[in-house]
Each structure stands twice: as structure tokens, then as C-alpha cells.
Length: 628
Image 1 (cartoon, rainbow, N blue to C red):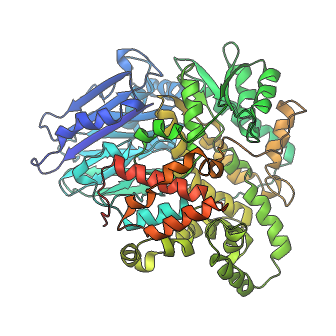
Image 2: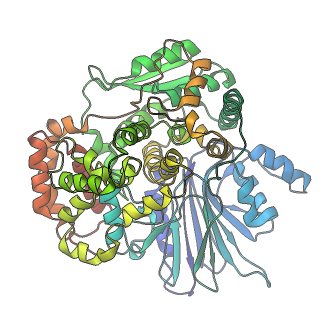
């Protein structure tokens, strides 16, 4: 797990290569163990790497790594979990290895199979390989990102310099541009900035499961998708067959994700996802498994008792972070690591548990992805129930109810739920938002920002609607929408940022592509969600492996009482919040939002999102009122 950055200069002049040391310095938290850089003979290509030593702790694991022939150079962030199997296959094809790192294997895989090597990789990754070319092959930079989007990749190009990095702040400032109206629009709507969108006009993100090639001669990056979720199969399997296959695939995924030259633990909330990871990891671990959780003493959000119950059942070593009086003060410690904003307040407990875990291990397994594979979100059951209750209502009636609800003040109880039903219960996930839906964005975005968006104002909703339309049935559509939106652009960003802030590597066994493909291809919706139950097949696995007394119907996870905090000690942090957004947002609306929250309306998520946006603008040194 590391931080990567690089610059390719086309023109031979006006190079930004001097920025590399500063870009690497900004990524030091991602890889504090070692720094390395490489520069081409003509000085037009520079690559940088911040290393967190996980596999092959010796010098042979260092990066950037140059191929024996000198033509290829790689910088890489992530883990290729099946590197041992690939190394054996490549060895039979004549490749030899000087060390035992997955970096060396990845470079050899590219040399052997080219772009097709991606199909053979099982892992989380964002990497770039410089190919110096030959008389017949033009020099180019090849980059790719893993299937689910666990590892980030930002890039920018101004016609002369192509730059990339693991985080936005490591992109040279001269390439970052101004505030992007569409990026801001998406952030307000969703609490995150999805896909290739970015907060700043000059920068893009390589989407999950996409690859990029930048040729030095032609100068334009070509981008393509190299993997997609499979379509639903017509094959029929019994529930017991599916259950056995799910267990086998998850066990295999955990087994290769335990590969490490440093100690590995498990983040354990006591919920079904993390408990299954711990249950299958315990017998595969060398010695007692280390598990980590948080306690919120005296709070209804405290679930440490469930985690302790699972740990005792498995004979695991239990570590708890006691937050007797948690508060927004933790934001001060997280703030330096914020660049592109994320409105999800669960990044705070994720940051805290990562910090605790890093005191004991360098690598941990987490339960991310289980909800998207097995139907774990309450939205699914609610949509099925609402369809049964409200499906008979004509769409014009639902639209009228939604129109009326949207006129209510933000934070009024029931407003979001009714407003989200304008196109029926199953599409409520598209039209509802805990942040700023379309009606609220018309109030909070400045007139200039709205004018610049024009007909693209509803792009955030349209993006999710396109994902929704790819499904085979309503539940499958909802799950594919989550997999393609909130999972990579919110939850996995949260995991990456919060763990890397503490130099901790987090691995997600549920996101093994074999398990993902199995879940979407073969598990029918009736074994995922009904009106009364979610994650049906996964719960059957839980009953096999977990204590019989464990409540498998809970869905809490790591969270914080953000509404309460903003009415308590955190209220002072809202003073003057609106002044940071002059020219971007309507300051009078933010004042009303704060006033409504003080009166008891539920605007904590909206205020936290605005606070994170303000921190982002400060860290990126974006002047107040700077638009497109």
C-alpha cells in the first residue's frame, strides 16, 4: 500500500517535474517507510513512490521498479493477492525474479501479456507503467484501476504535461483549475463526487475498472473500461449449492488476503459482514486473530458487545477503542488529510478505528462490499414494502406528493422520504438524498453556478438512473446502482482516506472479483431481499459460522451522532461557515439551514458535508468565490 505520482512532459519545455518532491511529500502518510523516484534520461518523465512496506520488506520491493531490459518502469499502489500463482505461471514462461514482491510480478505480467494482464489480476490497485517504446512502438504511459475502485487515481493534462497521483493535492497546482460546477453539483447531491468527475476543472479521476494509455506523440489519453459486472445467468442452483459456493469463495478470498510479511488483523463491528470475515479468518490465522472495534460508552450506537461476543466465540484477541466522550474534535486531526471532499460523517469513526488498529498491525481486513453483494441495505426491504403498499398509486399522484414535500424546510421529518418517491419506491434511491436533492440544490447553489450548469443540473440523478437501468429486476437494479456509485465513490474513498491517514492497509475480502461475479451472476434476488428480510443467503452462512445467540438482523456499522454533535459542542464550529462559499453557494440559505438545525430539524449530514467542503477548499487553497 503506497502513494504514487508522476509527470510526463510532451513538449520538452515548461516541465512540471520540479513538483515531484512536493507531490511525494503530500503523500507521505500513504507510505512513510520509504521514498523513491525515477527520471528518464531526457528528463521528460518523472515517477515518484511513497512506500508502506507490506510484502517483501527488503530493497527488492522498492519502487519505482525498472524492468531488466530498462524499457518499462512501474509505480504501483495496492496489492495483487494472487501474485504467487502469477509468479509461478510467469516462471514457466521464462521470467525470473530477484525478490518476492507483487510489484515485480505485476511488471512481469504486463511485459508478458500487455493490457490483457488486467484480467489475470486479483487485487486492489492503481498503477502506472511507463513504456519507453521501440522503433515500432511509441512511448506511452499505461495506467489502470481495480475492478471495484478500492485504490484511487487522479490525473490532469494541459496539452504539455500529463500528471497523475493517488490524491488530488499531489497534482501540480497549475493543473488543478478552478471549482467545477458539475463536480460541486454532484457533491451537494450525493455527498461525494462520482466516476471521472472531480471538484476542480483541470483534474479527472480514472473510474473503477478502467484503464488509460497516454501516448507521448499523440498526446491525448485514451480511456476504456476493462471489466464490468456480469449479467444475470439463467442457470439455476439450489440454495444449499449457492451457500456452499459463497462460503468457499469467501474463504479463498480471505486466505489470499492474509498474505503479508507484517501482522494482519480484522476490523470487527459485530455486524454480519465483519463477523463472517473474522469467523473465516480465525482458523487461517497464525495464532489468535487480532480484532479491533470501537466502544461508545452510554450511547445507543455502541455495538462493541456484539463484537466481543464474536471475538470470544472465535478465541480472538479483542482490542477496543473507548470513546467515552466522542466529539467533532476528531475532525481537527482528520482535516489535514482532506482534499477532494467527502460528506459521509462515518469517515470520523473509520479514521478513529484505523488509528487504533495501526498501533497493533499494519494490515487489516474489513467487511466492505458485503451489502452490495448480498442485499444488506435497509433501502432494499423498504423499497419492496413501499411498492407493496404504494405501487397501486398512479405516478402523477406520487409526483404531486413529492412536489409538496420538496417545499418543506430541509430537515423536517418525513420530507426526504416523501420527496424521494416521485418515480416510485424502487427509484427512491435516485431522487432522495440525505444531503441536497434537486429542490434544495436550487436553493443553495448560487445563481451563477446554476446558470453554468444549465440543462445539466440533474446530471447527478441521471447518472444513478443510468446505473439503475442496467439491472434485471428492481432489486438487482438497486444493488448495481449501489455497486457503481456509493460503494466506490463514498464507502471505498472513506476506507482509503481514513486508513491511509494512519498508514494502515485495509483489505476487503468481499470485493474479490470471483465473489462479486458469483453474487451478481448466480444468486437470485429472492435469496437476497424480500419485504421482511434482507441478505437472506448471507444470514444462512452466518448461522453456520457465528454464535447462535448473535443477532443477525442488526444493521448499524460504525456511525456517529452527528445531529447531536452539531447541537452540542460542535455548534461553535458552524459559526461563519457560510462565509467560505461566497460566489459558490447561497449564504442566506446556509444560515437558515443552521437555524433550522438548532430548532430540532435533522440537518447534521448537510452541515457536515458543507464543513468538509470548506476544509477541502482551504487545503487545496482555492480562493473564495472561485468558479469555473
